[in-house]
Image (cartoon, rainbow, N blue to C red; front, side, top):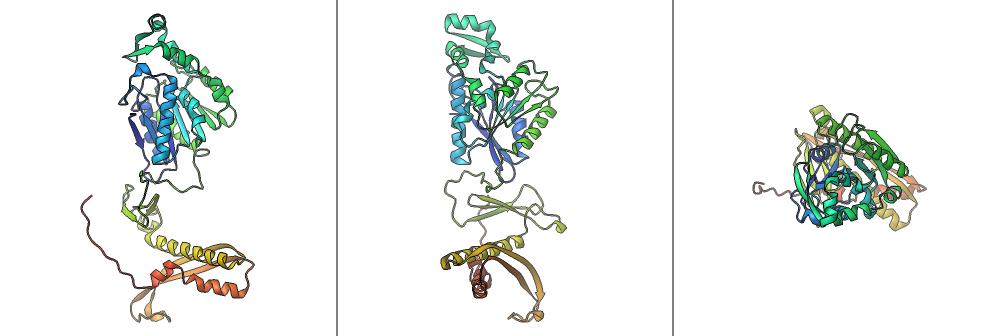
Length: 397
């Protein structure tokens, strides 16, 4: 079992990312935590996890190797794909950067890969084991001190990491690549960034994290890294034509169930969950809102969408040459005495102005009939019929 944490933005994620931490680190290492949380400010949900044998994950570190790290990443991506949405962005720090480059071809949804202080070859980590390598080769294993902790390294680890075809993977990377590296990194020197960049094909970019140490322990360095990474990812990992993904892992959302709750944005903003879709509602800007459409805007949108759908279905049934449909709506209140067609004679009544624009080679009779059909859309009928709203107070929470 792998221990993981999913950092979510306040609103529906624009993309899901998978973060791979550095060698012998954990998902909670400062750089991983700070960058992941910062990316949520840009609408990116980030899953970070402990590799097998590290942190809170199960298994024994001595039995792991670079290939098992790749398998762990593949399993984490499958978890996201099953319960949320597949990652379109992979981020790897240090040896985790080498791992995301190696696993990218196994995750077809990936469109962007970013490395931070990554070695060009995973066998770079062998340099950390120079004092123990002879003992490992002689005895088959040895206890090694890394970052103040003791780890057991076996010969199979050295054999596996030396046999990785990393240059071929980088050259065959079917995704945009961002290489981020500090020119003063003393753990993985910056020449590794050049080798990764040279091996990759376009689109590729390099960003220098000037003055940063390998673990990005300064908050300003991790913040800069996250902001730059998010701006770059917006060109590749975000899908502007897709609907937002509901961050709740509901495999079978209740059809027709709408849940509205106060948003974390404060004020009067409301978070609306409709099955797998998420919408924000708010008051208009003059009243201090504007983080989303107002309740009446949403009401008009429902009527407009229903009108357009009804006309499209009718025209297709009749095989009429109806082109694009657009509906413009506006809500207002008027005095009842000024309304000729209203049954109410006092006070004010709600008025919705609806203008339907129909493209296509339609004759006058067809346009007239479509105008009549518009009044038959289900939402229109609901608004003009007697509606019963039953209200109860449910249990707290």
